[in-house]
Length: 340
Image 1: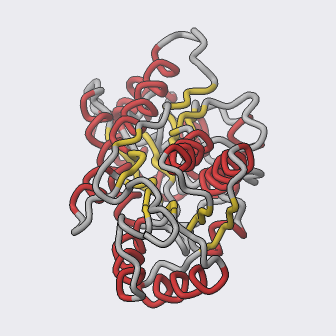
Image 2: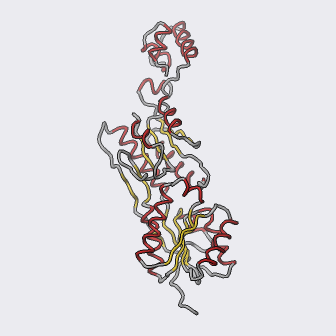
Image 3: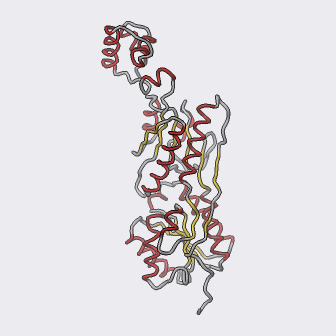
């Protein structure tokens, strides 16, 4: 990669003169400026986010790596992005949003050009191929998500395992004995996306401890898929009385499908969800839910990065897990007695 010293040598000036030409920090002659600019174009030099970076060694830009992969619910991703952007602005930082599939090569490209001071990485997989690079980068990073081996990383997220447990425990307290998880689209599980895997772990573990019959059903994000899932559940689990939904896009269509198939919510079937509070509260039947705290997670991620950038080596917590908060609404009720 072309460095500022290469530009200086090519233009026949000192590196500081190149810096002044780019930043305008000190006046230089027009002839010298043109010579520096010609060398920059000829060599293909990319300055570190322009004059501000050259003056301070900081770009005041954070990268938010939020790949919009198949199966991702974009409105929720955008809630995270808004939180990161608004929090970063409070710290006088801008945000570069990267929505393409940014694997190791993509992250290295961003880091090597010094466009950003630090990175926030989303859609973390249990065995994410980006992790070795993130551990070795000379720029700090924070993951919104927990891989299987988080050592050497800074991670923040909702405790999704505990969220799955809370939903099942709530249904168990209401007397339900047969439950199902309607989960993320199949490709999310194929990628071994961390948050989806941890919900399954919490759901199945809590059901097993309570002696409940349980099953897990990935579901495409469409009303037609919700209808098929409801039909399959009633066919395969006729004693089903409790459902946990971890798929924002099908929450309302699924409730509609169950009611069209003759089950009243919550009279015959109790429904809980892991989703944004505003979605759960806005449905025709307000849904008992564990909140997805996207605003707080975005704030926490930016706050951790600011501490890393400004602390002069002071350590920050490696793991921040937000405890789940369940709000009871109209979609859950005690299990009806058989024959009632």
